[in-house]
Image 1 (cartoon, rainbow, N blue to C red):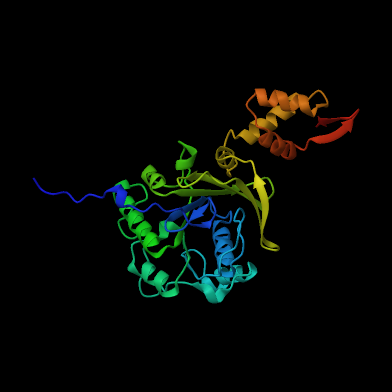
Image 2 (cartoon, rainbow, N blue to C red; image 1 turned 30 degrees about the horizontal axis):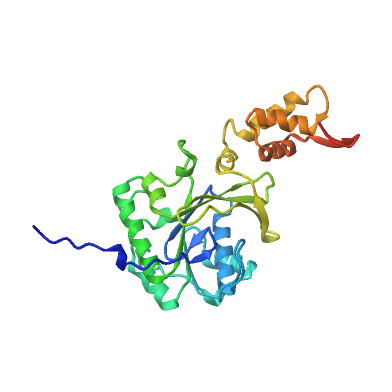
Length: 315
């Protein structure tokens, strides 16, 4: 009978999770950020990178860290015309931002240059954007047997280097469980400890970041973010938007909860004004959350007035 090499857990040292961004992005592993094109995923990843280069606080962190180097790989935006101007707008220390030169050979997630660059620059944070462009020949996001091996190798690099890796990806159009959209194989969702989703709010310049999965702590609260070509980037505070609500608010989404809530308000207010508390109670009985009701109130154009000490809504 052959001897099997085993690990006795009595010999394993327990350790606390270290965070680049408390709850959202752990150190020593891979985090995934998903969203539709054009909503600001790259902008958000660069904002996080900029904060790391300056040692600035991220929302929810109790203390800043020492300024650190980052590595940014972006296959969709040019360095001189998009990436660097955005980093400058975000106040990054660009001397701490490095990119692996891909002029002679395209980078992939299993490329040894990733680990070599992290070690060379003592990088604390790596952004790979979008992940679909760095899979390599013959690798499909929909084939668990191939993509799981790729992700495992990258996670091992992150662990050895004690570095946080953020993979930025596009959402797909398929149905099914909300959290699985955009990741190809469900096996990928299960292989990473933290998954973030970026989507639209009601304001054209406002986005909402929803923490859809966390294996290492409770999920962080949803966060509102202002993205403007004119004014730049700003953290606005917490939001109560859920992942289902975020995805229902995607461009082209049909039968969204926001649309249903809008129809509810048009129907209930068709004959005149009503007390806000009564509307909220009826909405709750109909399965419409207060957050969705408030969003629908703005989209429908509900008037709010106060009479006899009570708030009333009308069309």
